[in-house]
Amino acid sequence: WATWPRDAVAFDGAPSEYASSPQVLRSFCGRCGTTLGYQHAARADTLDLTIAALDDPASIAPGFHIWLADAPPWARRVHELPRHERWRERRDDESET
Image (cartoon, rainbow, N blue to C red; front, side):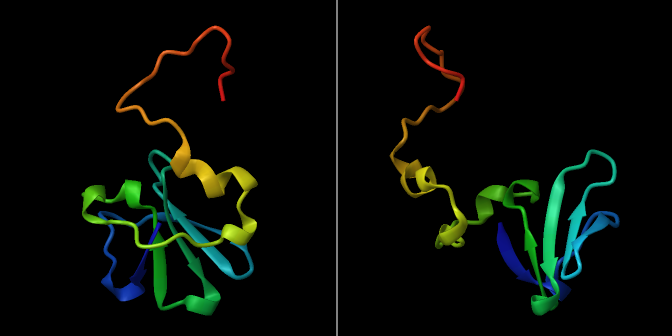
């Protein structure tokens, strides 16, 4: 996710929107269902966008982690997990997770 001023965001076509709670409006592609954005009434002048849905996701570099208080315990160590450039082969003694 990346946060942008709401008036600086333009979509190629109008996204579909869903009020997931009284304070939250979520946007998504009406054709494929891809999650696009999140807007909270308390911050109505900003829009959080999913980085992967951008035309050039590599142009956005992360600067910090947020919401760690709500993250599962393993999320604090996810950077320590093995890394693979592409698919990896699963050993017979490994689970799918």
